[in-house]
Length: 150
Image (cartoon, rainbow, N blue to C red):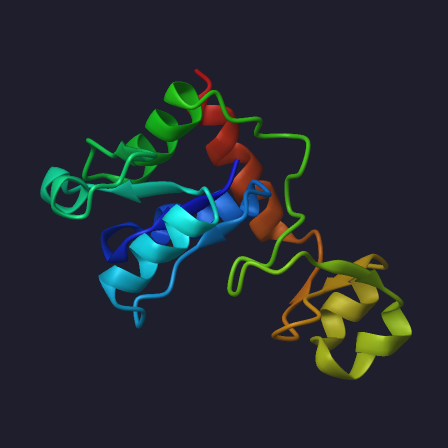
């Protein structure tokens, strides 16, 4: 399942990427371009606006009802029956590219000293260069996902 999220759903788009879902989100892209991408790439268009769907004749869409981020995430996970485990942390949350495991030695000069002392597994986005590791942010993300299931 692949998505396009409009400008109203940036945080949701980031979290869908964290879950491993290919999600196009770029607040600089015009709405017409997002609609075109959704249609040509057979992506689900995510929005909070019924008007956008109607005016652009979008067939594959989901209108997010909640205004609050955690409720939005829960709504999407439940209503679209999303897998929240299989591809977790497999995409860059910034640019949507699949991340790859890298040797610690290749990123040692790019990470904080304490991080280098505490962790051995690192991942890097081959597109934007963002480096990932399983730090405290990972635990917070897992906690939020766990809380959603309750």
